[in-house]
Length: 215
Image 1 (tube, rainbow, N blue to C red):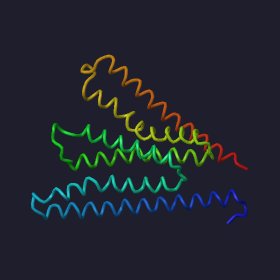
Image 2 (cartoon, rainbow, N blue to C red):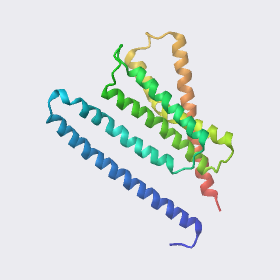
Image 3 (tube, rainbow, N blue to C red):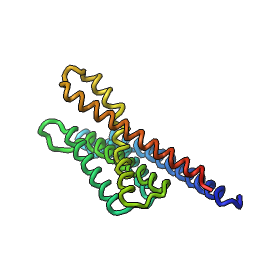
Image 4 (cartoon, one colour):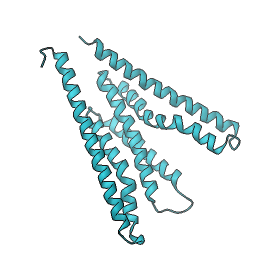
């Protein structure tokens, strides 16, 4: 090992990154095995008893993603108001996803709805982790600056989903069913999402430059 502290820090970061990737790979492998076992068990029970296995199968992959995202978040220091904003945004995203996926007046939760709600939570919390990462790499300590970066990160995950989804939905449903005002609003939201992604990319590049220029 080199005596240079910068080299030692880089080696430690590289080792931590490799360990993280190894753990993710083991988690994905274990998840695939568990999905196969649940699918096999589902086929061996009567049709009336398969609903429990449906919930388990649909929730397993988003739950594994949630575990990885939470581990990513816990690797950075977090303040109370930042955590509160993340919880509030996640609750709104999950509730909105449930309302959008709800069919008619049926109030029972379906396996697909559970999976979509978990995925919505994964997306928002991933953005929260990205915001915390910006704060840590850029050494931001001011409360308002941290909240601004965390807010930018919270919007990052949904923006990554919204950018490709909106054109696809409009193409599938047709543009003629929407009014000009609605199309203008959707275009403004799409441009805002693109701006959020660009802002997060700028912060990531700035953090990389700061790390490179560090003595």
